Length: 315
Image (tube, rainbow, N blue to C red):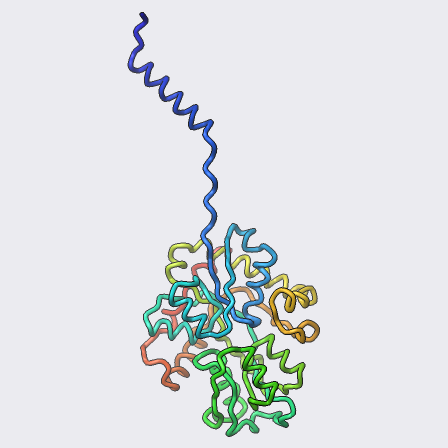
């Protein structure tokens, strides 16, 4: 009998194992983790809706879930509870989250438009006529900040009006159109929808150069999934460029896909979207100073501590 050395047996066993490994079916690829993004029915969210509908996130190897909300309060609660990873939000929400100890960061500005409109048939066409009246807003948000900024720019002290909290944006618009509110601050595209139904424009954020709308991400996602967030912004920017290049191609999308009011299909004036970038520290300082004046913010927060631009570099 031929004696087989231990070394030969080892070689045979290794070959068998190698053969089995070669013939074994490949493990299925692990699907990418979902990035859950909270949005509101406004122009700031449109590039995200387009990127999702056109498969631009998937083209970057991402799985993104758009989570719609009707109010800023619900959106902020979802982000702070970890139910979403990011949110179309504003600098006020970022500061309030920091004050409460929640680890979120401003990853980029967004581009929107906000305006004060008066009720159809009210005869109110100038800011001075708003003195003593109630204006529908969402409190402690960019909407309230926009109202104060626009009124002050028009020479009217913000204290001279009564801010009435109507958190749900569509409800705010309907109350305005029904005459139950004499004026309201609305974001696009509901601002356009209200104007098309007879609401005069009193003032718009375009005139004041307000830059307070942002995309917030949880710090944990920015720390642990930075390459995915960078890919997210690449897809966002490609969608924004497509909108910029051909507004008319997206008019049906506004209504049929994004769920915006029918009036916006023909009459909406599209926002010009810019490449994702961080807000200027002065703009943040202005917001923080306003929040302290209003008694909303008591913690000492440095503007730079709210920012994280790592995902915007290298592409």
